[in-house]
Image (cartoon, rainbow, N blue to C red; front, side, top):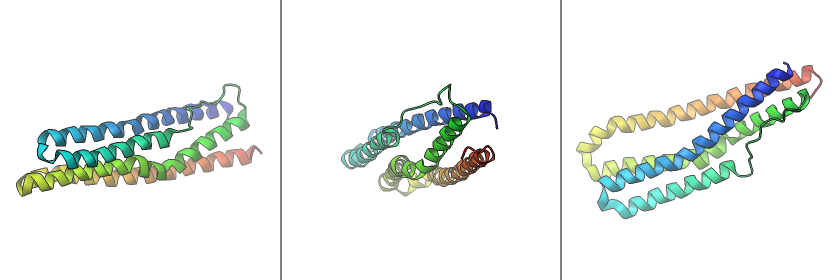
Length: 176
């Protein structure tokens, strides 16, 4: 692995981190959309819905802060050498791998709460007839949750493989 490939890897990690920041900011927007939909169509439950969606929104906004606090969007310095570049990439990969649990708590958790509130609203207010018509949406939500978790676990394994590759390159070059 050459310094050029290390720099390319660092740029890819930088772009991935930027996408993660944008992704974490979309969760509060989706929660607000769920809230607006429910308040518009189920006005008789305005207070409990506002409380639940408000909690989910506050939780997700706190999550945006917690997930991104103290984390500057740093790029690898242009004058970095091979060893420094390897260390930069390894640190970034380890950080992304370790963020999995935090993302589940601070981003995925509020989204599931908001989705559960939406489903509960459908079930309670709309009755059996509407609930039966909404069942495909509910199944889609369940598939989304399972798929999200599977994709994240697969991504965790991929990150670990990349870390192992960088460790092997560092050992081969005597940089570890």
